[in-house]
Length: 309
Image 1 (cartoon, one colour):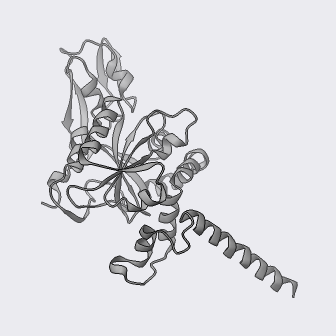
Image 2 (cartoon, one colour):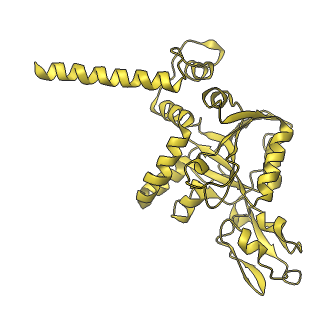
Image 3 (cartoon, one colour):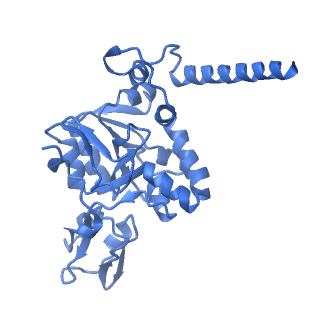
């Protein structure tokens, strides 16, 4: 009968561990915070639990996002094989936004119902968008920067777009609700720092777009993953072009490019394969020698002004 007592004991340990995690995760609320209850019971207060592995995954990701991303960067990423890299990218990926396209999301003036973005996001999962304009924006500490020893500052630069109640309730010390102007100011400041706006999609976050991250090449896990062969960030749909007559060969663009796509030998030249069309180089060029051009081979831009109209 010893095996029976061992089984009961192990079950008790598991139940106790889950109970402790629940209490910690819900910040001492035995019955959970309102945003958690809304997530697991559905809309309108209907008392039906919607639990699944994806829901549990989403809860862990949202509640312990810093730990989740740190584990992904430092433990998973260095050990990913080719198949796992593709699997990961299919379920967690981003789309580069030009500064104009990022601003368009924050200043959206019409509702976008759940819309499939198959042509815009070239992945089989997590590629939907649903927004109410103008959307609510909540800023939270960047988990990628938090995972680094000497991160870029400031760290509170990740923008949850849409309902941010879960983040505000579970991360009250590191998150805050932004006004539309504050969100636009944050986008502008990060753009001027040479950081890239990326719209992130994740399967565990209701299979859809949920955040605009302002990514730096030194801290961002998504950009690091790209350098390690994980194809998880799609081009904006634009590519940088250089007017050689106007270019002074100063090297400002080469130093600023987050993707290492520009080299300077008297004049700047753009590596088409590496350019993701973020526009950082175009705005930093003192001679206005660089422009962004639409390129069908780079995909279709995520322009909310043309979606759901």
